[in-house]
Image (cartoon, rainbow, N blue to C red; front, side, top):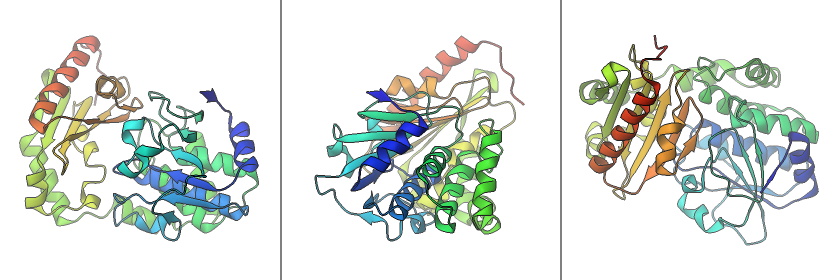
Length: 326
């Protein structure tokens, strides 16, 4: 595996063609926006580029991929993944491509390398920032569609610029998006200031059922699929729901587990500065960065909850009383 700089990544993308871009399972705004922006930028330069269709993209984000996707690879593409921290996070239709992926663009410091080359910068708050940097180096001209895709990725991975990963470069990226015509107000309204009744009910359920650990410094909540069905939540309603338990005063690390239709478990961990969410997910083959990390567990929800709780308690013992929570 070869580690590339931004300049080297730009040169690689300029030298090749016929791109297939991958996003990760349960796609968030960053992987959706990053893949869209990269595809649009490559097309602007006259390259053939598509995003591999991800059936899990939610209604709220699906517009980003309109006109950009193909359902299956043809076998001769230059394959690039965006915001994918480990091979286990690739969607089902991308799993057969392992071993054929040329380049990974990512910002997760704690990750599992699975490509021939990679551009990884853990100092970047979002993968979308990296993608815009590379597109600029390639000579891509700013335009509204690219700017909105980058803004969605950058704003969602920083909690609308509230998380500790936000840097001066993050704001510079957002400013560039605004200058290129991105609908900043409308996107913020849609992404951060609108809740459905079903989402509010789910938040209420989490409050009633989450378990506090380590004297209230940690929280864990396991959500059965039946509860999601009973409350009528959609994938959009559940987007970033894992950040909700972390907002409880005094909580340094919070884990949210969700049962999949296949009976497996997805885990999302969020942490405040001074704690490392990836320390929990690494135990289960996952990846991420200090503030947010995830993993897929091939085990039932109850069993997974016990395993994750044990990992969190072990982490709590390592940190001891050195907690700088609110």
